[in-house]
Image (cartoon, rainbow over all chains, first blue to last red):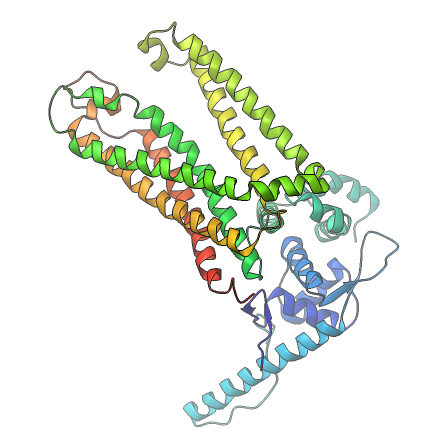
Length: 124
Length: 318
């Protein structure tokens, strides 16, 4: 199965593109709203430079789409391609998390509860 | 969300931060980017870390816009790698010319004694510099038909501004250097090389203009090359030439360092400008600066070489 990549590099949970796609999966947002949402659910602060660098790449690849806006704050939404990409990335992270949990359980001889992938830097 | 009054306060700052980004990016994302900065800052002035973060992102976008980084198509990666080497070589030329000036007449500083080591390193450096110049010229000749085709197809307006500035800086450099040469012929060696007066000031101006000419021509070359329709065979030729130039740069840097070391042991008076036979310190700030810039340029060149080599095998597949 092909791995979720942008420009050939494998994505990690705290990579800006994954964070942006995850945020937009909850609905369209403009730059500042995206930044605040990501800080809220992942504990990762994306400055304007990093955020718009990732937005540029995601738009180039057709993973997100700009929406019409009455003011300067242009909102973006996740595209169908972006949703498929995010689903693949989440699936991959899920498998990785499950494998990590399984090995930890074997190593520690204790039961580790199964749960979804944790975004790096998120509050415990 | 900031108030109108606060926005008026941060507006010019936001717009100044936007200047780090290329024009095409500013045209597409500029307004919303400024709006986000204003929302983000909420009326506060950006601190140095914030400014540096945006500067780094903006420069990254400029490199992408120039086709130097961030490309996934193999042919474009080879082109980007070759252009990276070209830019690195342009940077290398500046300390290279400074080295040529510093080492001027070095072989006349020996009455007798071993001049073999400095001669070997100096000649190696000069030969490699010549080879690099030929390689760059060959690449330009190889792409000349593509350039003519590009201009005939109406591409000139896209590069006119860059070429205009390159010509202006070149003419200014020629004028100042020509004037300096005439002036220098009326001065003694002591007047030219000691103290800091009008001659030295104009020398610095000439050096800055030369660096500007190199930079503007490099920018023009990048702007032209990234727009050309280049066949796979031509790209391979350009890639080979780029690898040659990229590999030569660290060798030239090593040769310059070796020349300094050998001169420091055999003729340190030349480096310090003291009478022949004296024993001054071999440390020279100007040579150190030359070697630092050469090393930086060599590193950038090797980055380009690696990009060319890594994408080479995929060139026929793509």
